[in-house]
Image 1 (spheres, rainbow, N blue to C red):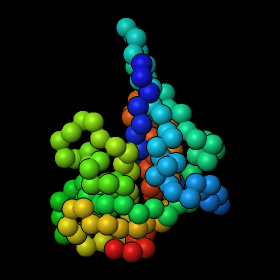
Image 2 (tube, helix red, strand yellow):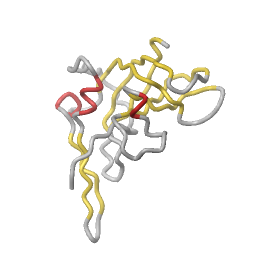
Image 3 (cartoon, one colour):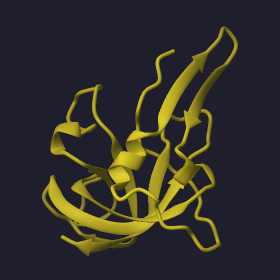
Length: 145
């Protein structure tokens, strides 16, 4: 199967100090993650390959992108972040670019889709072999909006 690039995920926080990301641009780091779907007559698995900065586990990052809330409401705590609005996975196209699920440590008031926002949080690999999600930004805090 052909490797695919993707950057969505869900995982637990690690209780130890986290290294800073080696990449100056976290989007470049996320674009290095590959996903290979392995399907046989009796099994299904998703094999993920992480760059060295993420292969050891969670890292602390600061990232900026265009945010879209995952659920409607007056307060937002779960959203999708894209480097470019043309990469929106919620806009109907199956062929989208790298994006990142962000879980905020505290809910924030709702905002217009596509608002440019900067976050700091824990970028955590998702090792579940049954999901295409590769990483999630957990315990995120808004830096600028």
